Length: 346
Image 1 (cartoon, one colour):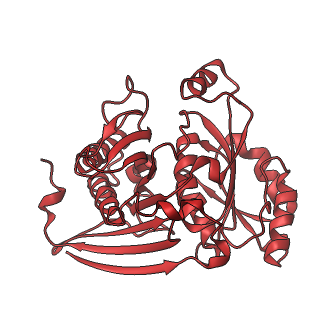
Image 2 (cartoon, rainbow, N blue to C red):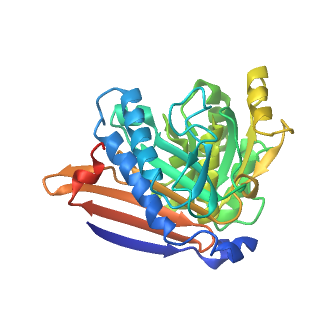
């Protein structure tokens, strides 16, 4: 296997004062490459079912592959964002213990196939994603909806806020960038619930890129607007995906706020079950992902963030984004796997 590495150190101006710098030794730096192996396995398993129209089969394949590889991870891990409650998911359920049991105690947030519909239809931006942090560092978000706003690094604190109108946030971001609002593009999930938001953003003068699924990738796109064309992420998506996106932003810099939508008795029950008491709280980035955070995402289908899995005569090619908050480093790893047996089922 040949790995081609491209490392990008985040500019010091976007790296906050971090008490977690002293925690660098708690999580071994070698875990970064271990995480890559985990998301690679899940991505390849899902990609074998790419374009087949079967979301469930693709998701199950990714879950099984990720679970097997997590068994080899040298950590005492607890799944805090996973496939559902223990009575809903046979593997990678919330609270499940993973890893070898030897190593640091860590929280793990994961989505073996973020964008199952995208994979089933062979559409862009399906990814396998995983975040890891010291125990107690990731928000234990229930499987409910979450209202989110996110921008990339390099802007003054408080540039955007969830409790402001879309037009106010767009004007503030445009001023911080030194451009007109008409030069901004917002990423929004294409859902009926967002009709008013879409109208408000367009009325303010900004463009919109609508996505059908995959809001983790949507948030990450804000970290490099010159490359992706996305300046801001707005709207309601899944709370688990919100925590995963926050983990990525924690590594790269950026701003994010979110609020759980707990307007139904069942959603409030789920929130209370994971210890949430303030049902109207707006969470900042540091409250969703604290301390030393590792994040990895491997492309399943081609997209603006990552290239998808390639199957060829000489083997399998994958592309993975791997990041760490304590060092502010992003690596893009293109791996050529000549020995493909490791991707086969045990």
